[in-house]
Image 1 (tube, rainbow, N blue to C red):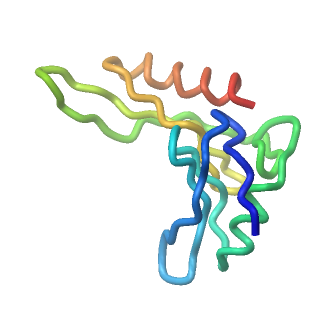
Image 2: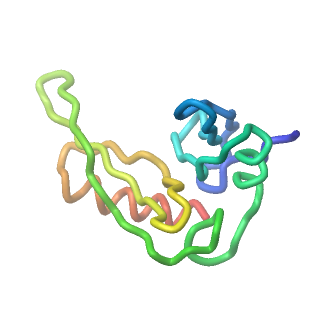
Length: 115
């Protein structure tokens, strides 16, 4: 089954295992991730489906922006943030910025602009 390009950045994507018997498609460029499914084929089908509003995969509008970690590099801390759909669990592009609030704003911008 053919995997469509990422709805956020247009990058190539691949199916990856997440847990035993669970799969999802992840973008190789921006690290966006589609919903988890119980087979590789179902994960690709969920990734390839596109909705116009809200979440690009399920159309859900219950979106949450969260920051989930930081990294230290070259004497500076960098914060990671994403937008996640609560309905299907998909995640938008990864934003990495040296300010936590700015990382969250950047994640929201990437999510909105990429669609």
